[in-house]
Image (cartoon, rainbow, N blue to C red; front, side, top):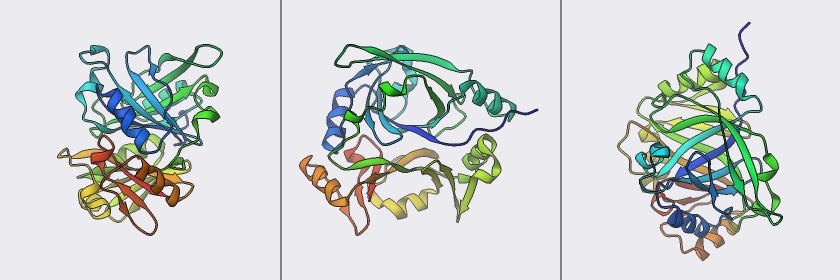
Length: 280
């Protein structure tokens, strides 16, 4: 009997700052996010997190010349990872493998979390699609063994009022190719066609796969400048209020903002390469 396909839920999104972790931290603080203390993975990477209601945003980096995470240094800055959640990493691996999806065996690692009472290890197991399967960036599943060390209330409060990731946008010359992959991963009925693009509902969020023309129409010159045929381009962030988001962005001297009736757009030039859209 075939293993059931996983249900898509959002665990976190990853913004690559390559070897510029200090500058990335300063940038995202100015955007109004409370960032966690720096973490050091046993795999060799470094991170800071913006913890939200049920997911988080991760800034990922590697030390210059560190070959353990060469894929971080090789990739451009910007949105570089979309991560699904799971409580059964072994089952996800088996189901995707049986469905013909190129996937790597589960990989376990950890990072110390500094707490008032001393450091504790946050432990994870990931199931990654084989490198090169998705040219837009990294797609994988994350299984948390120590959720209490990640989703801590003192890290959930943000000056910009952020409460969650409502949407991730992937731009592609051929949206149907990535839509087909997601269909194999989660079932064909998981995909919804929207004109020339596609959407995957991911828990309370969604991933939109749009054409280059659609990306330009929605975000104009705030969109990343990228000549790849497929790339992760934008995030929609839920905020408690646009006024609160605007005040935080103003306090951070963020430039090039576009304020509209129902959203605020932050250009990719102000975020290390990913367009941010705030909506209440």
